[in-house]
Image (cartoon, rainbow, N blue to C red):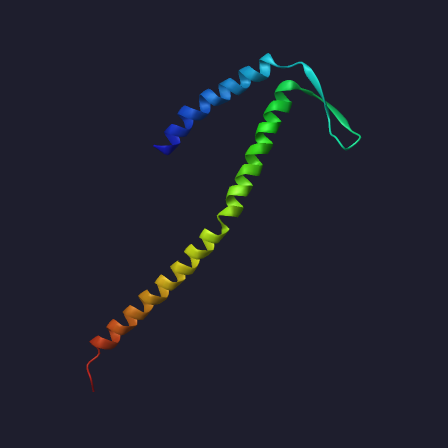
Length: 99
């Protein structure tokens, strides 16, 4: 279902991006202040590049902000595994007949 939903959203989005690229092929000069360089790019590449860069920065920020939660989940998983082993050990000790 998720893959189907991805195609339903992704395909029209890709078509809109292609339409945007075709409609905005003229060039624009980007000056990389304070650096002494400038770059001539098509408008669509500048806009979609900025969008992609923002997406990557946002994904990195979200991933980094989840570090504490992932660490806590890992610790809780280890604790649960340890408790499960202790319960299993207690059950096997309880089953053994006293000599």
